[in-house]
Amino acid sequence: MKLKTLLLTLIIILFVGFIGYRIKSNADKASSNTSKPNGDKKPSVKVNGIVVSEGKFSNVISVSGSIDANEQVEIRSEVSGIVENIYFKEGTNVTKGQTLFKVNDIELRAQLAQAVTRKNLAGENERRAKLLLEKEAISQEEYDIASAEYRSLQSQTQLIQAQIGKTAIKAPFSGKIGLRNISPGTYLTPTTVVTNLVSASEVKITFSIPEKYASEIKVNNEIEFTVSGSNEVFKASIYAIEPSIDVTTRTLLVRAKANNKEGKLFPGTYANVKLPLNAIEKAILIPTEAIIPIQNGKKVFISTHGKAKEVKIETGTRTEESILVTQGLKAGDTVITSGIMSLKPETAVQVTLKK
Image (cartoon, rainbow, N blue to C red):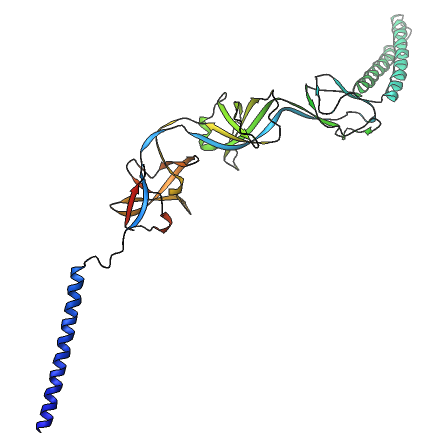
């Protein structure tokens, strides 16, 4: 009986001791957590940023264009025949009205001689008929027939003369002649391209701009452009603007003209055009690396009370390093420029400002 009582007492003592140990252990943990209240808080993310400010911005847009000759035409023969002579040298300058090549016209001249003989005979018949009509020896109808035949043969003679004139192909304007595709003795038809004639002392630069800038483009505005393979900056003046917007591309077609007397610009090449627009007085520019593309536009992160905040923005002209923000930011905002892909809204940030 005494042994059972002893064992029971021992068990009770052990149980009470275990409970006391657990209470003390929990109290120590609570005390440790109280002494380190920020122990579970994540550290702030270190990022770079800028404070947004307003300033004057000379708005310039960059677009691609093409260079065209001032005048350009494919030289063809209007009549069929054998090439008799070629009077131009490839790659040289020719003047307006200069004969380029001659098609053999021997058959046409034979036809002309025949037509002239018939015309002269008909003219003599018409003269005699007129005298007889005055003497009332023939009727008016007989005279009209003779007169009509004379006029018909006269027109036929003029037609053959015009065809003979077309056998001498002349330059329609002054310019540089291209490479020829014929030789003396070649049989030509009107479908044969003999060569190209290009007038490039002036060149045209054709380019398109987004419709939102259409109201800022005026005739006589100056533009600058460069071409591949050259660092030289060329200047041109706008002389023509398409009267309507292209509904497919939502762009406006513009054409400028540039001097090319030194021959540095070649028709058919691409041009990188810089078009100055109206200056913006209170413009907001931010670095391009601060922008995150999203499905419906663009966004940036700004720092507010030590936390990252997501802001959707609308942008305009882009330069080499910056982009114009037209909506979404204001002066004084702190825009985060580094580590933006790892940020989420409400992320704690420590911003180092760049000057």
